[in-house]
Image (tube, rainbow, N blue to C red; front, side):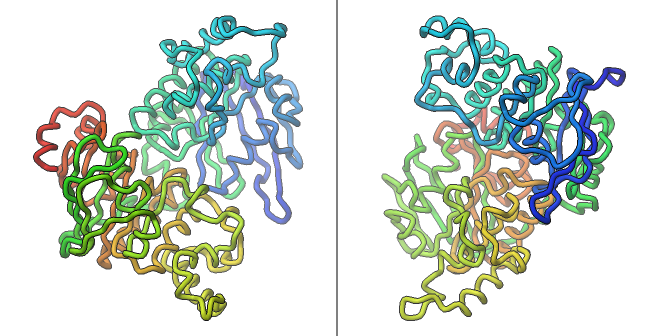
Length: 506
């Protein structure tokens, strides 16, 4: 592959938004049949590059060549014609349409009329290519799992004969098992000669499927590095431009009194009653694939999907949240897995976001006291190390990592008894992940009880003090994190052998 000519060459690419330089003379190359991992902290410039290649943004200067010839990529249509296809992080599947209709959507064809059977015949080869050969093309897309929808997105691009695929965090919302399905397809496509730009924050995927890595930092691209022979520590150091001493902070050695307990809890998403305890200063990790029931515990306690049976006690008092408002009044803070939908107010200032849950503390006679608002927002921002000069900025303009800090930090204003978090670092780069882990541990060290649900097994093993694993709506095992290995955790959340032990633990 080292001697293969470049199918894509980018030279001197620059792009600015006002006074902010997003790309500064970027140089980039991609070979035939190569998986090029594109890494960088949020805001480093990688998203700007892929949007330019997809025809969604226009460069200020520079040149793009495909197969040695200058390429004009001024629209998504022109990019597709040039053989460049883009799968965004946000899925564009239309749930009400069939799988076949989604694959053919937006494509060009000489045939003006399609029947369900002819559509099925057309898309079948592409479904087989991405490992969905057993899926009926007539199936409504909304019935598919998230991983299957992601593969349908890839099949759609293949149907347009794309030779360069750009996959922007295709596994951000997937569990470890579902990630394996996507990465195996990526490997297969590369072997067949497709060239792939793979944007990710999950370093494990880089070592699994990547051939080379291009790192972006502050709008500048660096010389590609061969993955073979590269260590995780070296990659992180090059990615951040500094040493990351430790991804996960040291665990607590002892805990306080029981803060939260559930007894025979039944809630939407659980097939069996669950009993758990959480102590002051403890971080409890709930591990499981999407739909396993891990998130159901968090949502039941938060009042998002109230329990239908069993009991919850918070500091010895019965907790029966009818909705989120009930839970918040009781001192329960909840950070969902979709910060853009319900974690932040994207068009509002950081000051307003950080003080929203505790607005009663900054109002006088029904009016907001701006001095109190400013003081509280500064205090919460300082704890999560959010740049104070950005407090007047819209939350939606921050990087993913800083948005997540806001989504978490806003709850400290209510002085919660317990913090519930779903997918604490989804879509967050390596540096920001380490910061968020450190802040959560600091809160636990101050006595806050924390529960987080995550489909990232590495995150669960590294951050949690205690781990509860879930499979098909029931608890499998409750164990100190230090007694678990990645292999045993993966077995628990995919093909558990100890459901009987889980019943005893529960």
